[in-house]
Image (cartoon, rainbow, N blue to C red):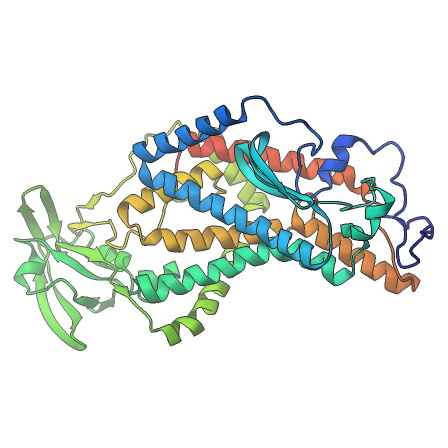
Length: 475
């Protein structure tokens, strides 16, 4: 950004006119890029046969619901999230006295709309998001002089930042509510959403008849503390201890009803129906625990912080050189590997790797742990999770809300964080120049904005391809 030209006084001495955009950059399309998202032309005439298009969209949704009901639930849930995001912008803009001309769900051809006051509300054809159109988001948009005082750019620093962050704020508030519901009303393994802590709260889910565990008297619900003197804090510890020890007898320390007991189990072959294996012969479970409302009020913010911190770390790892290289390899190898993901039986321990909670989504390969997921991937994971454990969708929606809120705050246009960055820059310039108002020339940011949109486009296409060719599986 560069210093702007001196402002020209208007008829209202409280309003300064923004500087003209730099030459060679401004086009009608570029003006739309610097809005809150790329928005369609508000002056376009209503399309022909909007009722037929609306009926077609409804028919598609009904067909999806009949085919995979949980996929429809996931789609509608995402629509609600996007609507609440834009509602946040809308409410804050109205409170600040800004003029909002449009509030639409989806993009593309108009299906249905109505006008109340100065705002047109409606639905469009392509379910790719939503938008609120606020006039005068930057110096690149021409606004009638009578409306200049109600533009975004003429409002105070606090009002502009408030509007820009309102969408992400709605995501974060919704995530907190969902986390509270998940911990208090639904329950989570170990009373937490942290996968690491959940992994430490496992217990015996089932004891297979004829196995060494059954002969040793182990029961469902027991917590194995150690095997042969080695701690078993996580389920994988059990596997590592018994691996390759067929025929041996080991000491098992377990906890039942708060009391620790010791028994001896023979690591021997067993068979019961379709359950064939060797060694201990137990299946793992992750019992759910519900917190009290008071505990939920204190734990929900902590869980929110953990998830946010983990998400920031994951994004940082993804955009590192090694992360991007790994992602490129995944895209290049997509569809080549045999898709044999699913719940399998570990013959070394005679146990199933499936979780009774059904609350976690995992990839079929460890190499896929660090990858972005497209909207198609999110919908597929959500529909799979809903089919296994409907209550687990609440936690998934919380995670998606946190991710969307963070991504939207990235400080580049056309994301909300870009508008925050511009507002902060303008405020700093006002302090430095000791001026009442300073307007940044947003047209100078267009090369960076176009490059960023190109990067987003490449990532969107790559993740979509990856989610179709090598989809993540839920275990």
